[in-house]
Image 1: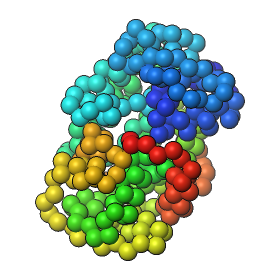
Image 2: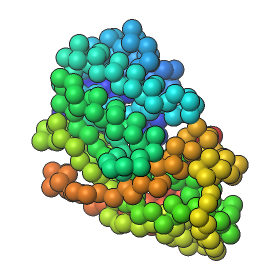
Image 3: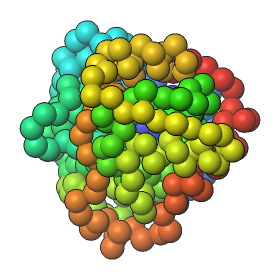
Length: 303
């Protein structure tokens, strides 16, 4: 087992699951939180904010490996790129000063080439900031992460359940490679124990490539619903985000950059991590059923 592990964003969609998984493995965990939140008994909490550099040295003390799982979309659309940049720089400075040896960063696919959304550009910039530091950064570029409580699950579920006849923009034909959230957690925990992942960038995705239309259609079949999708050439991301907000718990500050990013294909271009961390990947239909089952026992909240 590695030394002390710091988890930033420990109260988020990925952070909560990762904290539970590492705690179950016996890791020495410290969670960086802006506000107190329930954690597994025995996990240490450090109250701090990546936008407030003076709160970070105490959190970094004695840390061997840190997970970077934060983003600034929930705080509002305006200026989120600058907040992401500032947070990454503050984290990098504090981690370097504390002698942190490794950082594991969960970013997104679709982060190369032209025509990137502002959100994907910001995620790529954060990765570049982390990789330029003195510590070894493992950069996991994830496709669409699918699981109960996540924005992608909430959006697709709300569309399928509330709009049996759906007029959609062209992004429904964009190809993606959705990955179950539990598989993402397996990769994140696996990288901690597999030193050969240090300092490298990996694409991670599920076992199937499909369009967003296929994702919604297969979701509807699993729920026993009929769904008719009519793509149209003009439907702006802003308008799409607001009608998603009307029928789902996803705030426009999150849904708008998410929808803008749907124009970019998110498909793994390499699978080197499968040689280092081999395990059975969860098929999409199985991931849907798991998410639906988990959602039925999770407290409901607006994302």
